[in-house]
Image (cartoon, one colour):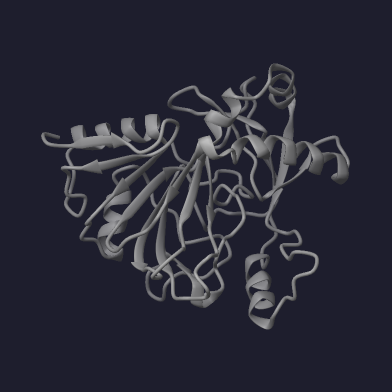
Length: 298
């Protein structure tokens, strides 16, 4: 662990890590230090890494079991645990979300590695949902504490006046080839830190007990606290970087501002636990079996 340095990037989220070679096996003390840094800062940036798909997976396994690439979307050929986040395949996720919250136990952490970087744009925004929760006015916080939301991968992704081309239609058909509906607490308690965070994002489509219209108004109101600029790390990618973020207490957004230039990241995720709300009640599944995607973390 000697030589590891951790420097904050913003007040509420993000730190840059140096002094550790993550392409090599890590000792338990180093893993503990990185896990603690992730707990505190929510997102970690590693520069000048020397990783490929195999060593990215090896690094991720220091934190837990690796999921397969995605419940419905195809992985890199021959590499079932690596998801290509690729502009060539129409994968610019320019909406705020937490990864795969439509399953019962979403990943606990996500890693993204830069492969092809556009000459400008293409940033990834990462927001602290813990900072968002802390800044809720007390009446809103008390309301949020009581709410549960249904998350699903089966909803209308297209903007109303946006023309959907054949590639987008094919992507949507693949994404919804297995339909998932899962109910999670709107306020999730982090299993390691005890922090509370708003567990919503793009896959949260309905508040249990409310109409779709009522749900949308409340979700939009809460989401506005997540995406306040003060809560966001705006990461500008460079070559040979790895970013890790805690998927239990963050949201992220891929900015589509690079004029269709090539942009490719490789994603590997760590199997997660079942979310729990402030009263100790766990999430529950309504539709869709994700056992082929991820085991439940111990």
